Length: 96
Image (tube, rainbow, N blue to C red; front, top):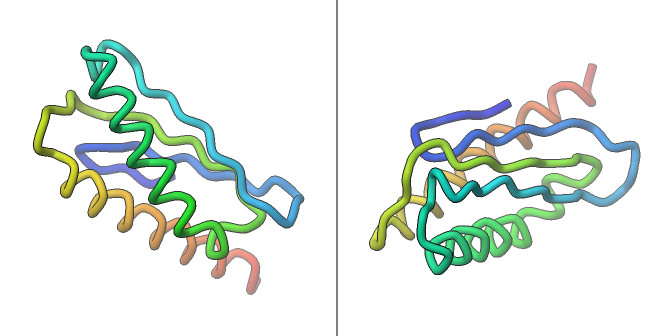
């Protein structure tokens, strides 16, 4: 589990050699459909760039607080931190 003010990211081993992504972007947190779709696109794009690091995990991303126009850069930076933390946890648990 990795969390900050923008996202909660949950990860669990899946026993496969691929990683899978689940999104829970609620209308309560991101009211406009246009913004919800933008957040989903940002998460998917970021996830695609990290697939090699996250192989063998199922990942679910939840939005923590309301998102507004202009938050795109902060969302990407937040996700990068989550992917890094999850990859480190994965590597440390597989080394045990």
